[in-house]
Length: 104
Image (cartoon, rainbow, N blue to C red; front, side, top):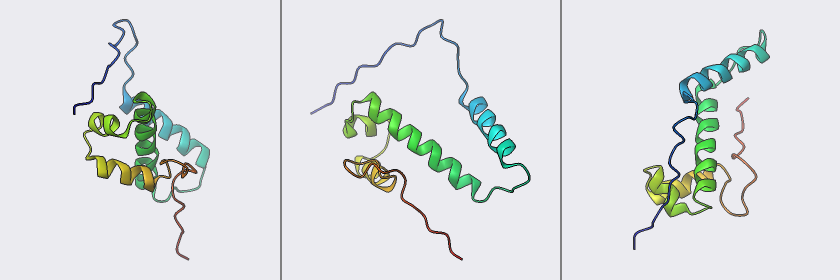
C-alpha cells in the first residue's frame, strides 16, 4: 500500500530563506549571549537542536504520520521511530530530549 502525500506548491514570490544564513545568525546570537564563557559540546548541541526541529516540523506536516514523515526525510521507519524515542517525541513521552548526565 502506497501512502499518497500532497505538497503545497511554493509561492513564487516568497522570499528565499537560506538555512545556512539562519544557522549562522543563530550561532552569532548564541555566542553573544555567552559573553566570555566558552561553549562545550557545541557540535552535538547544534545537531540535536536541528534534528529535533526537523522531526517536529515533519511530523506536523504529515499530521503525525510516521510512515509519511520517514519517507519525506528518506529515513528507514525504524530509524525514524528510534529518533523520536531518543528525543522524547513519541506518544506520551513528549517531555523533550532525553537528559544527558555529565560526568564529574
